[in-house]
Length: 112
Length: 111
View 1 (cartoon, rainbow over the protein chains, first blue to last red):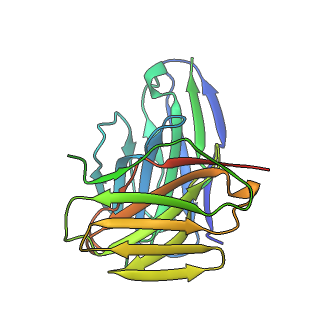
View 2 (view 1 turned 60 degrees about the vertical axis):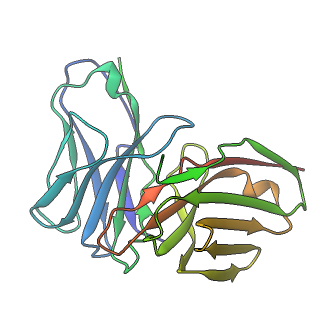
């Protein structure tokens, strides 16, 4: 079983608030990812990192930012939450040769 | 044309049926093929991973890759209600390329 954790699991917050979604993994994986997924819809890659101090934007434009100061930690921050940010955010990590990704349980964000 | 396509379903089968889930892809450079299962409101979990063409079996699950047709399949034998989930195929060229996920097929196994 993969050891990747996300907190909080659920978050309801008002418009304009700053939020940080936490993601940690204990597998020593170099690669980490953030995906956004609406119910019943596709996964969309919003950020990824191939190692410490390396971050890249994904395929889906996002107003969020990420940082990778430690291998095990890859937080995502929204400076000013809006209702359009309401979604599920999934974190994943990979250390395998085929980039087989292991996903966390997700954070379900609702912005009122 | 999308790089990977998958019938979204929903697919509904009776318990005990053999299920076939499929994806097609457009670029022959893809070499690594994966299947993920995602239960409602959970993160995807890796089910199967194959490299290049051929079959791979794990219990009731068999993954099949036909690179000449750019077609990948997941077969589930003796399907159970607990198999009800969305199944996503995923492909990548090398370990340093981004993984491309299919949109997923929703499966319901009816008792």
